[in-house]
Length: 86
Image 1 (cartoon, helix red, strand yellow):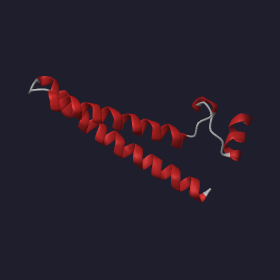
Image 2 (cartoon, rainbow, N blue to C red):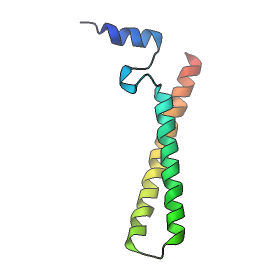
Image 3 (spheres, one colour):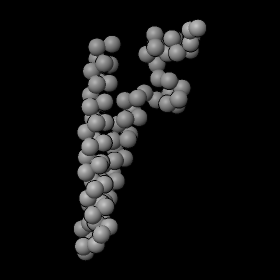
Image 4 (cartoon, helix red, strand yellow):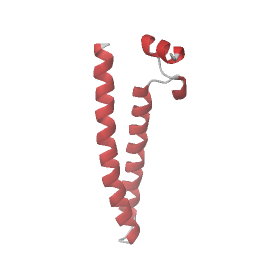
């Protein structure tokens, strides 16, 4: 059984409808931008606070966001190189 809709999408290299017609590169770039925005907001909040346990959570969140951002950048780079080849 062939999924004709999927085959047409793959052959024409068009975004899947599940992404609302937006490319995966665009989705990943938006996600990376949102992570960056939240990271900056956390930094600004840290500047105004004295030490408390909540800061420990922010530090852990920063580490996690660093990892997520690095992984997303790998995906963006991969998608861009695929787009240049295709």
